[in-house]
Length: 111
Image (cartoon, rainbow, N blue to C red; front, side, top):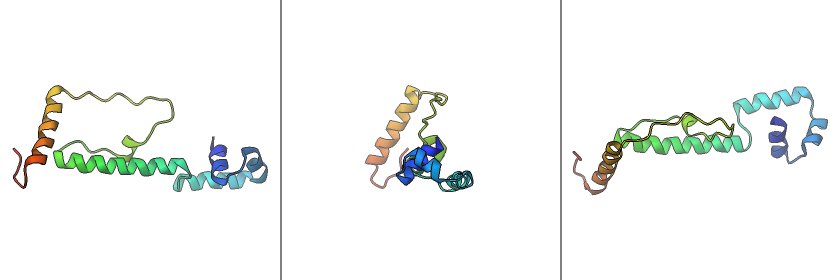
């Protein structure tokens, strides 16, 4: 699959790239990609970093659980991650009350 990622990055058909690139250079590109992701994979990491940061800033304000970039990274492998526990109605109500309190408090502490 890596040949296809490189072909997209170079704008060259896979077969043409394979004819022109040595196995040593190909291995170097793989090593480089492990340090500095190429193409869409890099964009996925950037989006996951932003999503995790937004989540963590909100979670921090309400005492919620922090997440990592890996928690927000898209999964295209076909392997489904383990299902997370669904919130109870009481937990949902607590989140809603906290949000409503923050919206209406006007510099007064919430209880």
